[in-house]
Image (cartoon, rainbow, N blue to C red; front, side, top):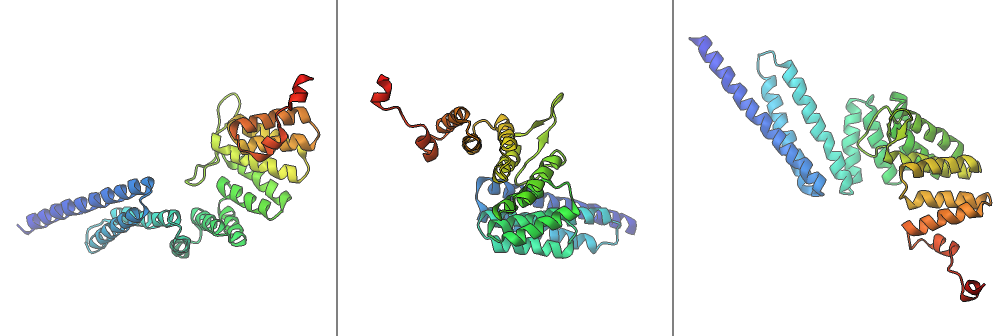
Length: 288
């Protein structure tokens, strides 16, 4: 009857492991909810707890003689995901160095992971390490040339370094590939709608950055085109209207500049440039 005992033990273990696995899922889910609510300390505790449970389960499975390699691989991925998720919590908590430590530990294991290099660059950018951020984004793009968000972030940093020609190339690449993927932070992606492709709202950021870059390169007509396309996507953005207004001013098209400033003032009544540009008429002017 020994085979019955082995069968019973196997069924019993399976129930135990299933309970443990589901417990980890529940705790991880609670952590995600806490993260979305902004309760980062508690979210971090839940992520660590879920990782510990799945790690314990992984150890138990690896001790068995049964062929459970698929289950082990699934668990390893679960553990890796929850452990990596800690970097997002730490980032939101302002603990950027600790977030980098998490990302670095994963890059040591797998330096060919484009997403992790993007995360590394994003945190570096946030703490003002711009050159290192550019290097990380470049490594990401070497591994995945279609990574739209990395092109966008790299373009922004190059713009801040006054490298406008290179920044423009990166903005164009961001737009070129933005229909390929969606990413966690931030999203700049296209939604193709027949008969004419249409940008998602978030993609206005690409066109706004492109417009500013073209302005710096004194390619004003192209800048107007970029700002106008951005406004088509996000018509309530004061920043885009201000960029458009300033470009019209630069080429001497005062009528259109006035209209753009009027819209800017409508969206942002405290905007000092718009208020200075659109001054109320004096009583004498009213009589005329």
